[in-house]
Image (cartoon, rainbow, N blue to C red; front, side):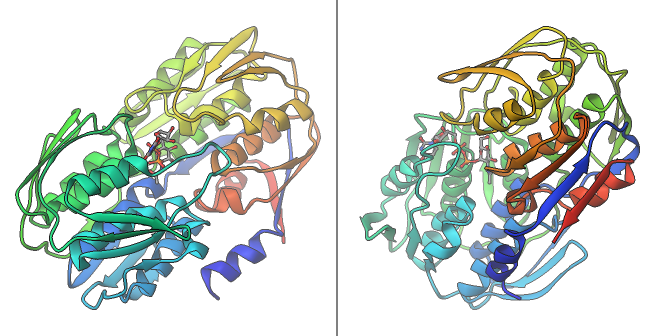
Length: 428
Ligand code: UD1
């Protein structure tokens, strides 16, 4: 079955949760979706057999593989979290609308295609539920590197005999923008300096893996990247790092259900901003080298958060944190600085009895004693996680529709929560 067929089927699925139970036990974290997608796009830069382990079994990964196969590559294996992909024959340079519109991160193939084939035709993703999310920074950077770019009939057409090294400043910190230009620069002629780049762990990881393949990247994890172009890269062989957003989501799941959950196979230093806020709210967070435990007695107070690029509080955890604050003691002010429209979940939380006032990019959440279950609609990936969390804590039953959003980024979420004691099942 194609990824698109799977998605159409999953559009009908619903997740049903009987709330009010306590979560207890251990949950293992999957590989990071946002690390896997750029690494998969980076396979375009290589010609040979790539092996990636610990890839999460989520819809976005399937969509990216579908796209890479369309480009002329060959997926030899995708099972048990391992991808073996032969990139030798990549020769098609089009990322069609039907795939890009389903997953914005498809735009990650733009830089690699230009670097490898000298040509790219990538659909513009359009707006999405959380904001306009343009690609202007990606496009301007590639133009600065000598690519001729035109926008026509909803597509970005790019051409460049060989990209050349430049100095480029990002007006806004962009994660996929940084990944795209960094990948393009690995095979460019000369040295590229990228300023005001993203410092997300997934970017640092991508740089490290590209360096293992022969790239010459310095500065990852700081605001500057210096990339010396090379002639070719060896195929990728790596294990994807744990998903910090999934880690944070299970931390909040324990907190919101008066739980005691050990989260294993994770990197606690990647969720420090959340850990600090949970502690500030009065929750217990125990950290070990590769695990975390969150202990909650159901009593926690409202704390304020402001989202920022890494190492600040992740925008991808804002919706889940809002669900927690909905039943905190007192008030919480949530300021979203990364995306202009990332409070879609608030309306659904309000239907469960939450007291939330939105003004522009600020949400004021006045904690209530309890939420009540309701029929709910997922609007985007992280918003749907926030509804699952709220439903776990709520009294009565919730039925969440449009769960394909959650399937894009959370591996086996209902199985994992079920093993922790949640009353959760999927209606097909
Ligand atoms: C990535 C993550 C996503 C996360 C986001 C912010 C992946 C696959 N996705 O998305 O989960 O929510 O980072 O941490 O890693 N912008 C522009 N012009 C551009 C590019 C971005 O104005 O050309 C703006 C965006 O509209 C947004 C801000 O920059 O307001 C940050 O977006 P960006 O970091 O690019 O998000 P993504 O890389 O798409």
